[in-house]
Length: 438
Image 1 (cartoon, rainbow, N blue to C red):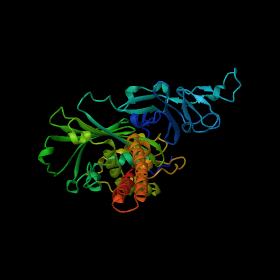
Image 2: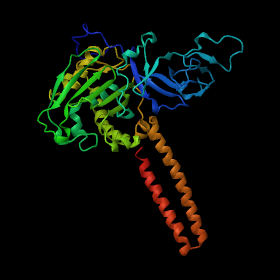
Image 3: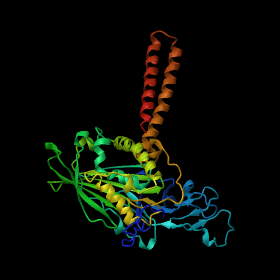
Image 4: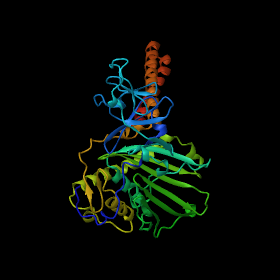
C-alpha cells in the first residue's frame, strides 16, 4: 500500500470485503442470448452466458486447457465451448467434453472452471465475486421492483474510461449538474447553481446518506409539491437519488450502479423511474433517452478524465490538493473519507488522505460512443442494424432509379427516375448523419 498519510481510523474500522458482495454486470435485456459476454471485475476476467434453461450463468473467463478466453467461444446445447480446442463446460463450470480425450476414461479433475453465483433483480444480472456459501440475496443493495402498474422505468448502460471511484464521485456531486449540464434536458440550469445544505447520516461500512437542498433558490409552482431530495451511497456500487413529495403516492428516483471493470475502466448502469411521467415520456423510444444520457456523460467525460490524470500524478493526499467547499463538496469528501476508513482492502483506491496503487496498469479502455455504449446496448445496436439495412435498400433504390433513367433515354420519361435517385441519395445522407449519433 502506498500511503500518503497515516489513516487515523485504520485500526478502528473493518475494511470493506470487496469480494463478498454483489456486482451488477448488465441489464438483462442488453445481454445477448446466443453468444457469451466477457467482462472484468478489478481486471479479473469473467464471462456470462445463458444455459439450456435460458438462465444466465457466470464462469471464470479462462479455459483451463491453454488459457483461451471462454467468452470468445460458442454456446452449444446449453454449454459454453472453447473456440480453441472445443472443451465444453456447463453452468457449474464442470467440463463435460474434450474432443481430443480418449473415450471411456475419466476427464482430468483440474479441467473444471470456477463458477460464480448469479441472481436477477431490478432487471439487472448480478454476480457474487467471493465465497459462494456467503452469497446471500438479502445483501443485494436494492429491493425488488415497486409493485406499481404506473411506474415508468428507463434503463441505460455505458462503459467509461476511468475507475469506479471517479464515477461515484462524479454522480454524487450534486453541485456540478447546473453548471456542467446547463440547458441540457435532464441536466440543469446555471441560474439554479446555489449553495447546498446537507444533512448527513452516520457513515458506516455500508455507506451513508444525506438529505440536501439549495439555499436561496426560488421554486416555481410546478415544483412546489417537491419537499426535498435524498441521496445515498450504498457500498460499494450504488448511488441512489430519491425525490420526496408532499403527496406520499408520488414516486420518482434514480439509481446509478457501477461495475469496477479495472484500473481506468468502469461500467455505469443507470435506472430512472417515476409513476407520474406524462404520455410523451412513456412513448419515447429507449434509444432516444440513451442519446441524452450519452451526451450528459460525454460532457463530463473529458473533465473527469483530466481530473483523474492530474490526481493520479499528484504524490500528496487529496486533502492537500483540493479546496473543497462545505456548501458544494460535502458528499464527495465523505465518499473519499469512506475509502480511507473502509476501502483499504480494495485492489486500489484514492481516499482523502490515503491511497493504494493498482498492482499493474489497466489496458486502455475503448473510446467512442459506438464502443462505450452501442456495443453493450441491445436497443441501440438494433437501431444501427436497421440503419444499415435501410442504407442497403436505398443504395439498391438509387441504382435502380439510375438504371431506369438511362433506359428512358432522357426527356420527360427520365424525370421520375432522376427524382427517385435524388430522394434516395438524400435519404442516404440523412441516414449517415443519424448513424453518427450511435
